[in-house]
Length: 201
Image (tube, rainbow, N blue to C red; front, side, top):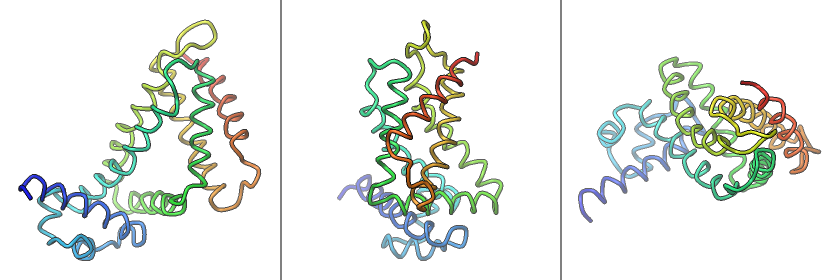
């Protein structure tokens, strides 16, 4: 194994271990346990990520990246805005039934708690999430709607609104508080939101 391969192996092992420990313990997560689970020293964490907060920020980016990449496959380029939002909403709703739905919810709540305890981490997490959200903004920008094309500003407003809507709905579905929120419900409410938000300049 080359040095680069060993470094990537350690990075991957630490991210996987951090997901387990941070999801369970939040800001109380111990670097020693994360390193032990990854079969590396705590020095590897500082070498690869700089700090505990650096590891958490990398964990969020690693967690979100495949989700946004998958979106590009689920929402074809040829769809107009409302059909694109419909496809996005249905994909999001299907993720609520996936085997990782509860761990994902646990991680979301834990990260919010960590951000509240550590404003610096909160600011870094917000920056990381926004950079990943650029994929969603790009996904909607330029799509046809109401005789024109969606601007980047309109797409940004829509992405922010959809994220807030779906995070709340997903929590409700996962916790059993929204039993009637099926794919059609997600699609209908997302279309209604898109119709309103996209009228803004």
